[in-house]
Image 1 (cartoon, rainbow, N blue to C red):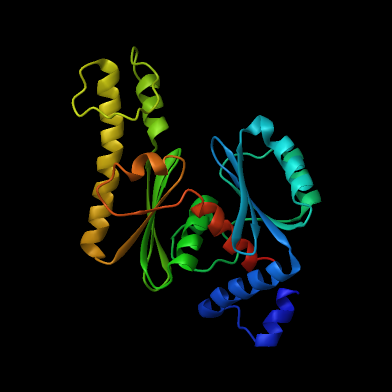
Image 2 (image 1 turned 45 degrees about the vertical axis):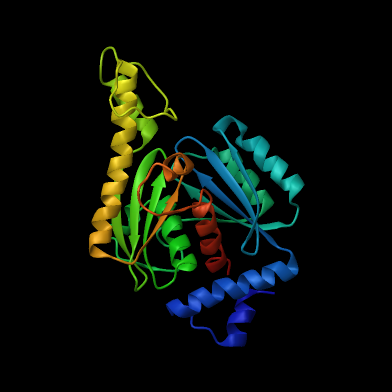
Length: 278
């Protein structure tokens, strides 16, 4: 069932935001009837993430490094022969051979600032807004309509993105992620070692390594809580989403109430894909 047929049947006006939400839902409904499946691909700075959707139902997720990506795409084509559409979000680099494999597998939409989105983008430099941030706000717009939403992505960088109650993306901020902070201490000093995060966070470091753990991890936690409190001072009924690779590590260490969803970006990509199929 084509979306253009559905549009004419219900006489939808695609330029209306309310109808965009309805378009997403009804297209997903017909996709489930036809068993068509979607593939979302998130090319990050360090990892490649894949998700298979049947309508709005998440069926499978996979994560791999760059050297494994061709194998993963080939396996997906075998495991899910009913994949028909794919969306590609890339802040890193995807090998050209991988793109060709995806195009053989499904109809590919590359997410950009020109894609149809379920929110109003008021960013003053829309061309420079990362596709990962676009996808996160799309997830917020569809899952939390008429809410003030702050989406925090704890990945290679920590991003903060705000959606207003009238469905306008206002912007946010970007700061170094946990791994980046450890690497910077190692790279820009003569003797500090390269560390990875630890489950136990010392308040007072009694060694060089513990002092680094204390500085990096307490710094990130206090930063995130501080940013949330700033937003809460202005928006009392704030919904907070935490996602990204460090989401579960951070979730229980933050003082504020949050929704933690490691697949939030992939879900946002799927919503955007539905809007851009036809």
